[in-house]
Length: 188
Image (tube, rainbow, N blue to C red):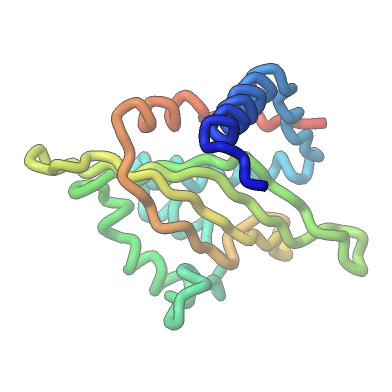
């Protein structure tokens, strides 16, 4: 026997109210605690983003592995430090738009035969700001995912990089992005 529409609607409203109440009282997940090695990658990711904020092409290139691939999920990724630096030159220059990002998570892979972990993954949000005063959509928010490799010199460099296409964002979302940046790595 079918329930009358009023009973179904009442049940749906009750479920929605219960879910909303639970969401308000549910504990927030504990933030990740990272190892000191993961915090090294965290700091390196922040330094990489700072090289773009500072419009420092040499510093930007120094964060990229010689054999890196950017746009790693694309059919034709950009390969090699020099090609990536050329392709990103306009972004680093920052005259048409500003790109900023920061990590929210870094993870180190298992140690290799030498007992040292040489591969790490980082991810977090990114913000694109169109600097054209005539633009109708000033902000876009996306995300990045990077794989880092520790070289023989002990320096972490990006080996693979990719991201999620940005979506339009409001001024409030851009402010929330900026306020979400943590300089200190949440170390264990």
